[in-house]
Amino acid sequence: MRVLMLFLDGVGIGRRDPLHNPFAVAKLPAFRSLLGGELPSSRRGHLTGEDALCLPLDATLGVPGLPQSGTGQTALFTGHNAARLIGKHFGPYPFSTLRPLLETDSLFRRLTAGGKRCCFANAFPQRFFDYADRHPSRLSVTTLSCRYAGVPLLRGDDLHAGKAVSADITNSGWHALGYPHIPLIDPAEAGRRLARLTRHHDFVLFEYWKTDHAGHARSMHEALDVLEKFDGLLLGILEEVDTRDTLLMITSDHGNIEDLSMKTHTRNPVPLVLHGFRRGEFVHALSLASRSRPSLCNVTPALLDLFSLP
Image 1 (cartoon, rainbow, N blue to C red):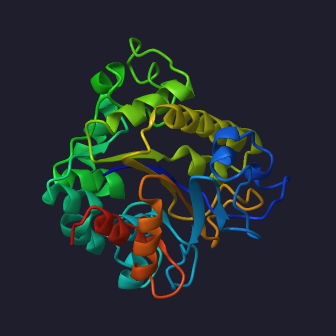
Image 2 (image 1 turned 120 degrees about the vertical axis):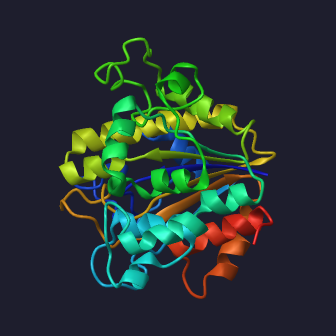
């Protein structure tokens, strides 16, 4: 049992509005191929393809206000309703009282404690590590969870060796970061590298934050660029991943990019796309974990159930 999780920051299910929703106009053949030629929308959030499906997840967590990354990602990666625990949505970094949850109950912590091999596939430049040492309170949910769980954060050398993937997918930003030896690659090659990581790990996570950045910028041009790069990455994954033993999962923490008419996050549900191995069992576990409609809080419990871990 292996899982490749693609975490897209700030991607909700919105209206089919070509003026404000880049999903309505972007060229996304790989994404569409999973779901029978369609993409989820507010009219139809549940979609089923030949060997994939999409479900909407509640990102509001029953708390007033706009969902935020700190609480949304904590809920996604621990199974705890972080927004309800602190009484509000909070972000982008986890609220201080949520850090103990990440230390003891994160998906990375539970998987490694159960003997599973985990990989956070994003590569980080040296300046990130320097900044993190100076400002440890300004680590994201994913990076903080890895530090607590002893999962190494990958570096430029790993990226150059093809054992990591850049947050911008193509390595285009690394020259300016002081890594002129790291070559550009096309998105499909980045996807193939991600898929190959599942041969050596039980759980692989790739985080793509540029979707949230494009949503805040309210730039249709930037939004189309980041979504189409992601679709190229997905194409490479689909070419390489072995769905006989691997579940591919795509999800998010809150809405944003699907509605460029506003600069803030949205209250829209987020997509959960499942492709490949044991996807039906995951949906069954998800339904058992949720008493009503599934939310961000139900993903980690369902994954642990799939790995036969408490």
